[in-house]
Image (cartoon, rainbow, N blue to C red; front, side, top):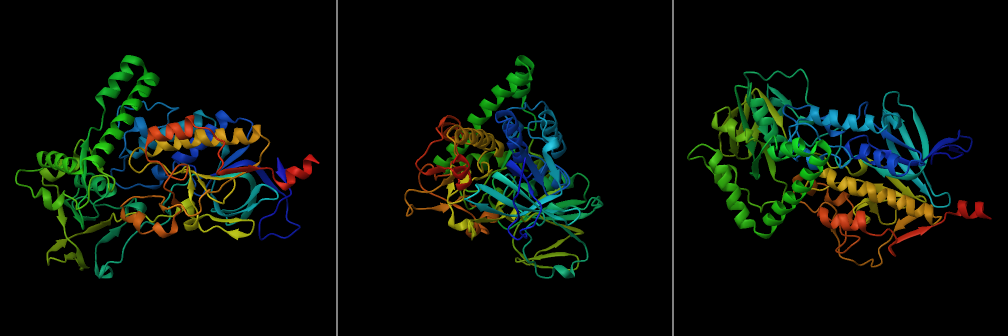
Length: 507
């Protein structure tokens, strides 16, 4: 179905734009999930998934660095509707990517995905109850417009075209190779070479043991330690349940067990941080060589789960350190030199390859520019409603998962709620809904209330959350089941209405 609508900057004589009920931005794990729920729960709705790149899979297709894998188990990181059948529970990227593309194919999503479609901006008209969306073809540079009743941002929260690399003095003097994991060159040969990985987060603890298998030596250079915990790559309990009960029921039982386990571990760490710190240190010390300086390299200055814990499958990082193929240095960089790095302590680290595993650049909604009735939306002035909509912004939803558990657990609940919301609007003859807080003076805090550096750098550009439901962004699966799956849609702080166009049509 099409409608005679034009983009914000188009002339009055522009051609009619294609109209869709829902436009999903991003064909990664969230976008594929949204599309599947729309197709299953609301089969009469027209929708398309716009993907700026030339392939689906999002993160799992973009990143190509050595060893890339999940840091959550796939029984909870996978979709509820599609069992994870592989024996690996902490899985590598190719397995995850194959799983996502199977999910898209099995649910008829592929024909709805439009590749090389980068969304630049969207403007909302309250009179017409629709978004006009400006799209650029990444392969040809051509610009087109689409209109939609709902816009769903499923592109995550970081920039795909640029990772974060701080300024390093003397970098131009280094005669070796410097790479960022987000832009890993396929032709890079590091076999037999000295490698320094700058960073201590999830990417660094993945890259170090993977590169250590063939490099001469790999040094993880960190400014501050992170909490690192070994986890089994294969879950014997899950694999046994699949054999006993079959893949679908075994998956469901494992998923339930792992959700409870994740919540228990997180709650314990938050309630008893000193005990949790001692336990993590004890585990680390048992896996490291005798006499290893655990407190220098694996004892962070913050409490467990102030930042996300780093998982290492089968303790591969610790095994590489024990074998002498990898080491950890905790220090600050003074300057790059021609042959490596000089540290604040005066120590020199020789390197042929330097990997800057220094994090992401946060970019909410893929940098999408939003205007509502001609007024530009400033994200920092908005509040998140149920962790999926923005105050004052009609018919706009987004998908951001958990930071303390598997991302996809929340995405599934958000998708369910989104479909119920659309069905509720249809049942009551509404075409518009807009969250508005009843108390404009409600205390607020950042949407991603998390201590990671990449979040702190971007906190002033992000939406905020309130101190009470439905403006409090839950990070607890059980609470979200009650709110998003079982809770009602009608809410005095969600204003539903008819557009002027619909009112005129009724007359």
